[in-house]
Image 1 (tube, rainbow, N blue to C red):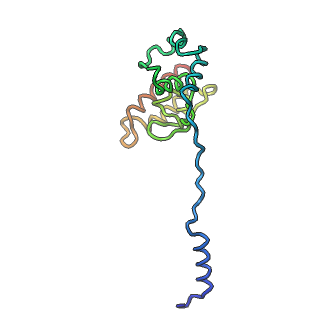
Image 2 (cartoon, one colour; image 1 turned 60 degrees about the vertical axis):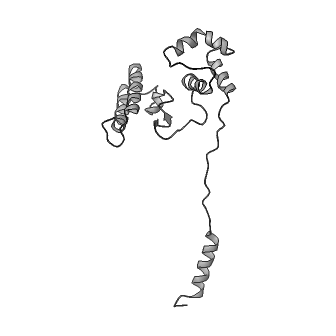
Image 3 (cartoon, rainbow, N blue to C red; image 1 turned 90 degrees about the vertical axis):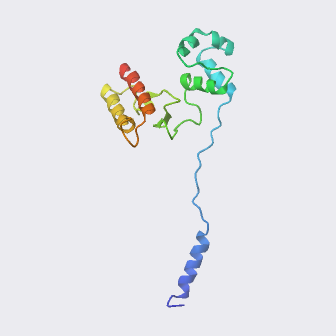
Length: 168
């Protein structure tokens, strides 16, 4: 046919058959089952060495730790999650987050984890390391930067910077 041998058409036909609707396998991250309210409460109770919500409300350590926090309602799961984030750690499924407000896998509006946000080791970081990490992020998030600047993110970064630079 028009100067093309039949074997070329056969090879092409086999290629098409072999690759027809062939998709690369997509590796999906395993679904992380969120903690139940009971599990969240148990972790918080353990953190404050109490057995139930009544003891928690009476706990001096809990009162001191939550003094100055926005009001929270212990009948709402979201508020228990806020307490978990603040006093226990990162909720399952919220590791390595991406999107608005997420820096180095941490949503800075949900977690106050300056060492992780600045990608520093608290045991080895020097004042200069902290300052360099802050300046690097400032060059991205300062409100005067037209494309990437964000006042809310920058303010959170500044608070984190001040908190760890005072420690160093």
